[in-house]
Image (cartoon, rainbow, N blue to C red; front, side, top):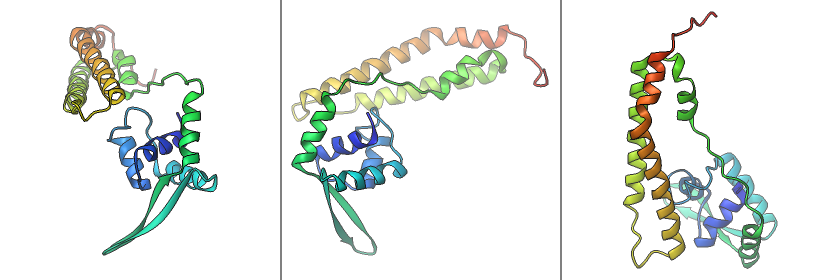
Length: 182
C-alpha cells in the first residue's frame, strides 16, 4: 500500500484534511496499515486532485488559518477499488526492538532486561488499546475482522515475549562484551 491508496481509503470513509489523514495513519484506525508523513500526504492529495479522484474546499476557521478539506469523487472510489484488486505486496515489519534484540549479545544484561520489559509493556498496552475498540453491532464485519486479527497478532507477540524474554536476557549475560575499539 502506498500513500495514495491510504489517502483514498480514508477519504472513502468520509471527508478529511491532510492533518486528519496523518493522524489516522499514526494513531488512528489506519495506524496498522501504513504511516505517512505530511511530506508524502500533501503531494499525494495534490496529485489525486489533479487526476480528478478527489476534490477539495477551503474552510475558514475562527482565529486559525483556513483548512483544506478533501472529499473522494466517484472516480476516486472506482480507482480505490481498482487499487485493491491489484496483487498485494508482502507485509513489511520494521522494528527497532528487533534490531536491539539482534545485538543483545553486546549489551549489558541489565539494559537488555529493562528494554525487553519496556517492550513487553508497550506490546501489552497496544493489545489493550485494540481490546478497547468496540466491535459491537455498529462495527462493520470487515472492521471487526481486522481488529480481531490485530488482537491475535498482539496476543501472540505478548505470549512470545513472556515465554522467551529470558533467552534474550541470557544471551546478554552469556557472551563476553567486546571492546568498541576491536
